Image: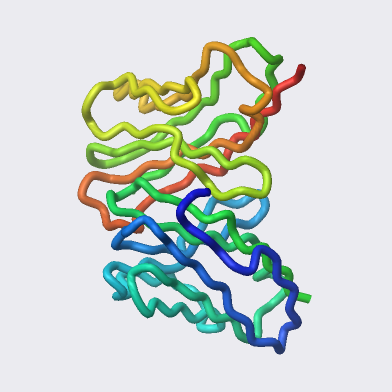
Length: 111
Length: 115
């Protein structure tokens, strides 16, 4: 139990589907993150939220749309994705810079 | 600009033998350095961190790392490998004063432990 819960753990979607990934943290942290992990590539930061406000958007395509309704919940809305978007999407939270607490990830496959 | 290089993509050791996972970094200012571990089908977990205090840092599960400024290295070691150490390990650098998202992850080193 890491304190950060991601659902669903696995998701298969077509390129025209709309789906959402959900992340919930029970640690009382102020910051939440979305990362993309692809095979043989370094972890890629997608978005950062601080106290519900988006503070970083790392040039992510608009087909990925984050939402942070409160400091404990983070969503990633997915729309018209491409096969190259297939990856493990990791949510993390933190209170201290650099000290991230990760969820177990949502494995996304785009057909 | 900051960067991090993990010198080995794959390291294989026998159970009970020492582990050495190498990491070199580049940073313009005083960096913070971290090691994370990822077990199969799991998220990443913080093993240890260096933030300008003691240069030898001890982490969880018997791991430690030494910050060597002259060599710009932050290698991860463990005296005796256990089967449960088999996982992927990531070296991470953050520049002092950088934004919260300004972490640079290495490409990872996969550690295999043979019985």
